Length: 334
Length: 305
Image (tube, rainbow over all chains, first blue to last red; front, side, top):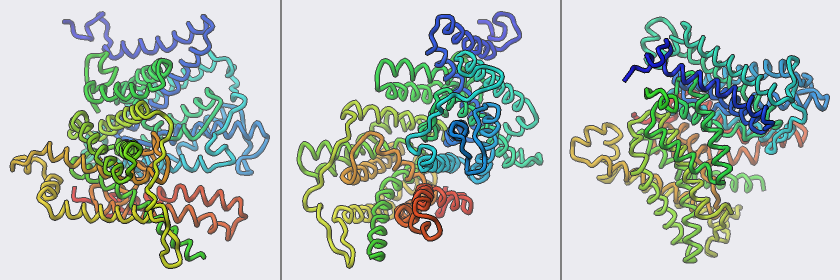
């Protein structure tokens, strides 16, 4: 047998080939769908991209930083609510908290979502990161529940029923109502988040984060405080996920507390692990698999979550390393 | 009037706390002994409620249903432990979270498959339907029964763990699993037993609560998260912590929901006070947990783990 990286005689690892194919697949699918005039599949591809991006965010904390956050839906929903609330005030011409006017410009909404996510993530992270292990899992879950119940009690913004975005927010550099344009927008956002993650993990900061996960005593001995490294990674992770949330709200034209629910947090973890924890493209493979399972099993039977559970159980018990691990034949964990 | 209301709500809080204790004690026992974080504990609660409703419906006896609920959940617990959970003890917490999350999906959808998606209703025997007078408060008998059952379970667990041979093994297992294995204790049977006890307590809680609300798929999830809050506040692995945490969460949550809106009315207009009060009340216990963890990152009564 040839070794994987001699295969095709190119200086790329098999994982890079898998990654490249995933990217090509993701671009080709909506283009073909557009040519065939199947708007549904363009939007489905956009959905995959956005969910992948949410998982790319979580992967920074979970995969690279070893922080099992069970509350990332809080950030996903937060991004969504920023987009929804901005659009509502813009539509009604009213002021947020009587101070800030709404906007329907994505280029203003996104920074707002990122800043909000950063503020909330600093608060949540600063307390949660004092704890470790199971306590960290549960405290992040509890904070997310807190945000969830807050959203439900916000009757001004729809409470339990959620909030419609009547007109999709606009962007100056394209037509956001054109499905392919919107797809491209989300795809570029995903690429940027992947590139940032890649650059970050290649930097000194990334090395410190890896060491914080592997052996924090050693990191501390080297004169770097693990707590602040983790906090920065946690905040970055939350910001990427919130960005995805803002896009998701515009894709659906709708935000509701289910974006913040703990089931959603679980699903984002599932996607990261399904694809392969701590692999750059793991979340993408995971999102493709998850959304396709959801769509096609969901079309086949109402009880699709039963089968999702079986698949997930199988992956956890037997396929450590996730889908990318399976495709590259190199199982790796954690 | 206000005193009577306060007393009644305090009793409601205790009843809620007792129910949380039934859930939390199993969770914390399982974590303390096996080091397992079990998200599917809420599903066992749901199984208990469904089995109780089903058996009560067939036999007409609520008491039989209650026993069947606890036993049914324990049996489901044994099945799940032998098939899946057993493989997770040596894994990291992430794997445990995922596998038990998968179990939630499977058990929820499986229950919906077997019993349908419509909620079931559980009728309590007429003996328990009345109310009794406690001083100035008139309080439902059934809720008092829940409180009594909860305290009996607490006492029973205390005796089981501190006074019996199997309890000694459980405590030894918490401290050093290799050592008690070397001494000839069948660890995997011990673990299955502990898991079944936890499952039975969850099933009992589900069966008891099923009569207060509807029995439906997904009923275990809100309770599960509250039970997590309880054991995090109490200190994971500590049954005493679970009891105190459960009472704290039950009382704070119940009283917060009733009294916070009126407290806010002292300095706000009524409609704003109602919405602010209920918003704050719904996050009160999470605030409590955040404060406890910020001060004591391992909870109020950290177990020796």
